[in-house]
Length: 188
Image (cartoon, rainbow, N blue to C red):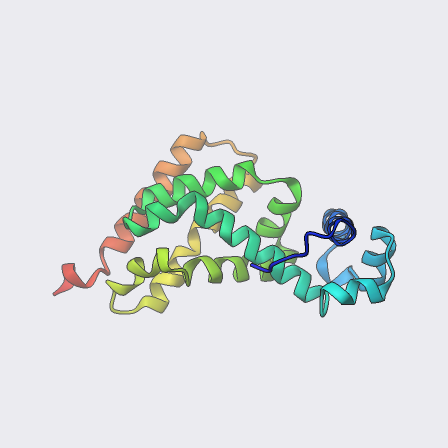
C-alpha cells in the first residue's frame, strides 16, 4: 500500500479524486471513464491528478490493493488454516458488507479485470500459499478457487433467492470436496 502525505490539502485532493472515481464507477463502465471526467468531477486539474497518479490504471491499482488487503483481513486466518468453508463464508460476508461501488468493481462484468486483479493479489498472498503448496498443479487449483465468486455473482443475479447460510454451506461443500481430491497427500 502506498504511503500518502498527511498534508491536509493532499488528503482533500485524494479524497476528491476517490469520490469522483466512485461516482464514475457507478455511472459508467471503466472504458468510458477518462482522466478529464475524473478531474472535472473532482474539481482539480489534470496536473494535480498526475502529481499523485501516473494514470487512471494507477488509481485503480491502488483501489485493488486496498480491497485485497480488506479481503485478507476478513479471510486470511481461514486461508492459513486451509479452512475453505471459512474462507468462503467470510468472503461472502465481506462482499455483502461492501459498498455499491465495491460490489460493482468486484461483480460487474465490465469490471472483470478489477476482480481478476484483486483475486490475483489475494491468491498470491502468504495466507493462501498453503492452499496451493499441497497440490500437484497449483495453477489449476488457483483457477478453481475463482469459482467462489462466480457462485456469489450467480446468487446476486438470481435475486438472492437462496438463504445466505445455504449458499455458503453449498459453495463450501462443492469447493471443499473438489479441493480435497487434488491434495498431494491424498493421492500419494
